[in-house]
Amino acid sequence: MALGNIPLLAQTTVYSISLLLSITAFVPMAWHVRDFNGHCLLYTHGRFDNTDGHLIPVWGSSFYCGLSLFINAVAFIVSLSQLITTSVFLYQGVDSSFLNAFVDAVVSCAIAATLFVSSVFVSDGFRSWCSTMKRFPGCEEGSVMEWDPADGIVSLGFYVMMGTAQFAHWAGWVGWVLQSVLCIRKLCIYHERENIIISMARERKLLNASQKAYTEIMQNAPYDSETPAKYSDRALILK
Image: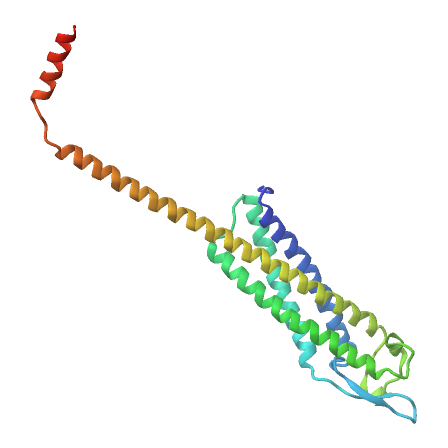
């Protein structure tokens, strides 16, 4: 097991955290949509009926909750698959290729960008909902308000669920930004390594060419047969 590969180990850790955060964001949001009978609480406003005090809502678009559920489902699938892949790489002592690292970087950046948009919708949409609860001392106390029985709404615990989903969205966004940085850093390392290999290959090619040229010069140089005799005569005189 190659635990010495710190970048890969860091990616594995961040993927595991992102996996848990995607579940933490998905489950409360899905639970809230179920309790609100398929309606989305985000950007919902309305007025309270003076007769019996129940809220007459003007429901916000289901797109906001749908986007949250979709991006967290995608984040869960990607985190799980990448967690398995990086864990296998760690166990085998290998690393991903340049193409895989490039795909990971693109996917991580796309999820981070989409998750940021979804987090803004969740935070601002929840703030818009809480501004409707002005008749209560706090937004969390809106859990006990009365609804029209025909709506089939169960608002008990919505504040905790939406607060949990909001936290998980922003924490998950931070995790995917960190994952994007790690993937881009790995791409830079691969690019530098490729440049070093190309430079070494170029230098080796130039060295081989110079050695070949030197060999050809030595082979084509004229040979003087009297030169060895002259040197031998001088050696005898010196003796």
